[in-house]
Length: 402
Image (cartoon, rainbow, N blue to C red; front, side):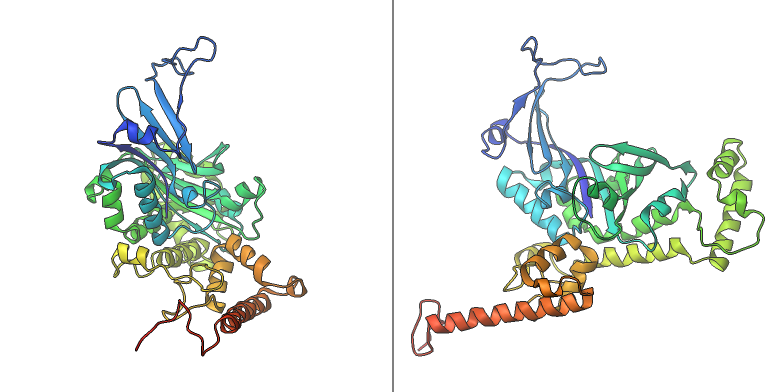
């Protein structure tokens, strides 16, 4: 659920980061003169710094002594490649532990300056259609944005946070990834820390202890604050031609007709409830279930216990914590989970455990055959072990008891 962060690392020795073999620092210099750059491209004063990258994260050491770390923790989990799959609480904990181990960072010294909390889902209709009919967030118009890293998305910028909606599948398909489903991402980007500080979240350690599941209500609330026109409305109301026009809503606000705006928004809500497929409600339900799935059991179990007891399939080494507690192999349940929520992983499993004979079959048949082949692989492992170490032969891995 966590994506982009920006933190200031307090009480960290420059020399520890500079000596780390995983980081190659470069000074920000003027190539013509060899001097450190003191002015940025906008003509503003620029504090000299050196920076290094690792798995999509950027470490910056300023001459003033300040150290910052920024980038996507979700992409870090995927070796810096992408953030279109699921990033659950367990993965978040793994990333934090990895940062602590590799870079000798203390989480309580990582002061948050920016934080993105978001969810990837398969929406009930095409993502672009949802984006087209998201007109306002509260009373702020959505605007289309584009950059090379995030692709095309819509956002509404408030004073302390930004609401973003993406077509993640389209963005990463353009980068050459094979994605077979729609992927919509809904995200809150906290640009000021007041809201988080009021929750007792100041640093990464606070965020870990707070628990990502507690952001569920905020995510759902902000999604439902979107003024969304449902194109499935089946009504003879003459107001529909206005309601489907984003200019109608912005003009009401620009002419300071707040009461009229609220009246028509309520009318649209009633029409949607009576005479549509309720697409916004459907999407909210999908978001809700996905948040629960990504945070399964974390309300009852200590985070460090989850991290140390990660359950993996004995054959594929894939995480199977979504299956029954006594599971030892990736089964139908786990395969269906990856098919719906992480297509990239599912495709990797198919390449390893599905023969070409079934490559054109429906997904239910493929899941059945993959599960069968995984069980066979486990049986083959056991038969091989039995041949190497017959029952009458003691081997060094046996549990010896007398």
